[in-house]
Length: 442
Image (cartoon, rainbow, N blue to C red; front, side, top):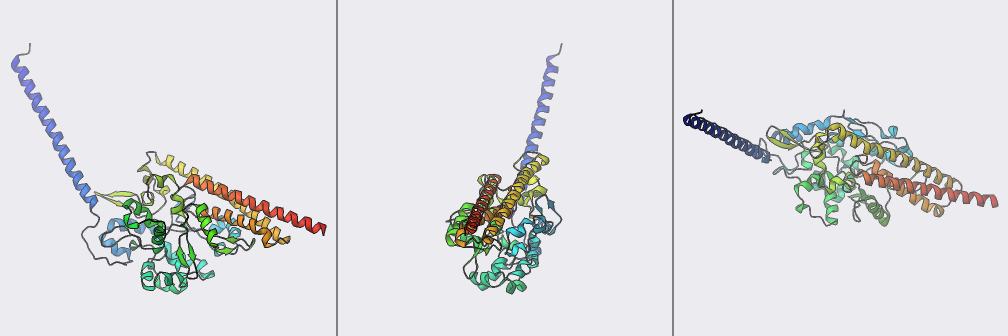
């Protein structure tokens, strides 16, 4: 039998061991807590020891990079123009060659002569200066608003209206920088800020006080300075966002119709046409990510960890080549996520091709009606339908996500584009048939 003394000794050893293990756990917990506190403190450091003073208006990203090397080291990667995705990327190619229908869809407009796939932010000004569009047409300085880092400085010097109305080519020699840190950040605090009056004016018109915006909202607004639909208003060609009625395509269409605006007259149908730009913000605003509070930067500039510090990845690019951005919220493997994105984009691309086919047949029908002697009054409705179909196709085509930012809205818009194009075709064919009957009876 076990003596009481042995039992007592065993119990004491057990208590000592238990106390030791508990002590180790407590010490481990305290150590982990201290490490976590230090990491959190490091993460909260937005502005490290200043190596240099950064002046407001400093356009050289490498100067900012002396104080913010982590962000700068990712930002310079936007120079990479070898990234390919099925419907985008940074490799330049001619959209007119890849999608030849665009030549006729934009007949009579500069985009029918030159329309290349855009590269990264590094090339914003380089590619704009190289495009034939600024040579074919005397573009206003307003075109430089989003492409030149010098735009805020020129606006401050010339004034908003004079900057917009000055011919682009007159400003070209004063513009040398594409996207810069200064576009989106205050150099003293690194707070996000808006430097382009076009967005500020549009938000004010909609009753939105940018001073009340949260940081999460600002992580979208800084992108909305440029990734939007816009037009040049009045004789001074003032950059204006058509948001008075709302952000969706029907509200934008109504706005342009109310003010009687057109970008050009179609060379084949003589319809008053509208060219959509790159309405990423408007399309995003109708999607699930926007409703869920997901910002542009969450997907295109996701937080990454560099040592103990959490920073935004400034290598702006498609999440298709950086699916860890999606995995911050979606707990699927990369192949599942990629397949989901490409399913949306493949279906959207299919609808775009159907819309292009319908539009070409509408153009043919209207041209035939004109050749048969139809008057402008007779063709007014067919041309109006052509305009409405074209701007809806263009809204999705020129928006850079190929439907992903708002899949259901993209599909709805393209369904309407196809419907309006077919209505235009039927209306024109009806007129032609009437002309032919009249001709045979005379």
